[in-house]
Length: 150
Image (cartoon, rainbow, N blue to C red; front, side, top):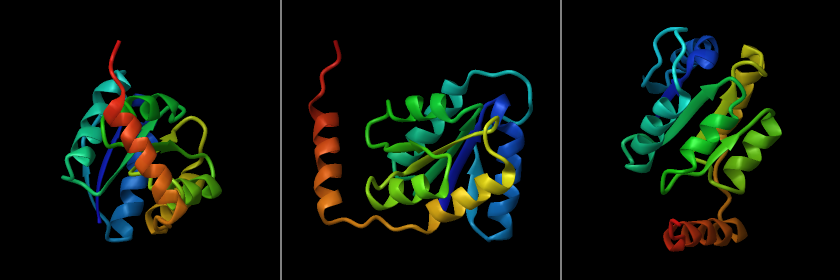
């Protein structure tokens, strides 16, 4: 599995810990920035990861900002993305099993590195169940295709 990862300044420290975690598990990733704690705008980094995941250059993505909420909002603006902001392993499990989430968003200011790594583990290892959930994901895709901008 190939993971795209990025953060803003508020998620930088957690991103670095998650990168080390991925390396220890021999999981391939590419870091799309930011590369320091200097203040940046999270939409710039969320957009990049969402686009490479939507274009199938990477199987999944991980985005980190202060809360995870902003990155989820940004990523979900990109067609084909189902980003989930997860603060527990239960949410990570359900985001994969029921929603086939292809981007995980995390909050650098709300999660400990240990909790974040547990969430990442569950999220990476949980398959999509399909079945009745596939019907729902298809409806999400249809909505995405048929929604017109104002």
